[in-house]
Image (cartoon, rainbow, N blue to C red; front, top):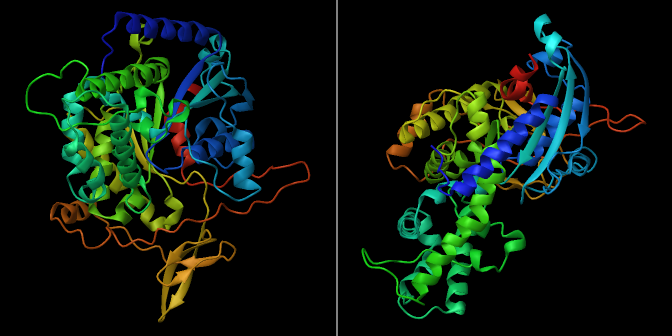
Length: 491
């Protein structure tokens, strides 16, 4: 269960917002779709490709409303939340299609509304339904989602758990400078702003080192220390865990008191408003994960991804929205966990990536003791940057993927220039996901798991007509994701 806000004022505001959404939905039926993901999983690319394929008649054979011809028009409309920045779809799709570069990653919340006019498959529904559905896409960093469990933790618990995790595996090397400062700090001494800044800076540097591509760790709260935005330098972001004694209370005016107060301010100023104003109003959710990158980085990255998924799924309450629950505290009734970059593998391994991600999710669900109803898992590629081919080697046909690796990418001694197409054998995922987790459980850490060549490719080259972009962005299973996330609302 997600943490409950204990403030009656907060609860009343959530109920009021849900009541307002419900009343608006009677006139203009709407689904609020949350899109988030863990580090570099492709949230911006997912939204841009989804919208582009809907607007430009993309190949969506598994999205039934389009496949059956029941969708008559699709258009972008002004979003309902004037205080939330608009998701800059036009800029992102231009970067993908014209410049062939990947758009900048999500650093703050944004929103976009796309509206579909459709004919209901039911004659009865056609009498009462306006045949129109707006999808409000709410894009937010995965780091913000991983902050929600902090609402249920006091400062002591946060400090103890964070320091204990920092002393494990590769984190023990990355956290040395910060932990040295922490152990040297006199928590009972008078509050000192410079000491607080040094501790907060060292802690943030440790979190950034964990997030770096070469480690690809996922469990990194507090997330705003990585993405400070307009709160950079504020007291609410100038704090860090402390090594606290097993009992006792902080003295007035001490460093301990300062850090505890700022931690509580972080929850009040950063986490609670996000929960109350955005997360508590979502109907559907997709969580994107770069499982391939984690597996390529080795057992510790996979274990950390599983830990992050456990924390993420604990924030959701999948279930059916009744009128009462929608008014007082609606549930996110469908959650999709999607492993991205399936185009980095031959299609023979797509189901294997799906199975490995499903096993990760099942293990996370088991750890928190929740039911899996309303949760689905799939492997997809929001933008397909490669095509498949075969090459002959030593008299055998070898399945490969063909694309343009980004400048600076390497395989062995070969370094790519960002211009030349090349064929790459992507490697194989294990048929049985248990074999991967058995290797992890055995403590084997000497080699990446499994042996897959993870190379970043440039977006594909698409043709344009004289009137602008007409061809839809190629993808893998994006239509299946649409069907799960909102296809039922177009029935």
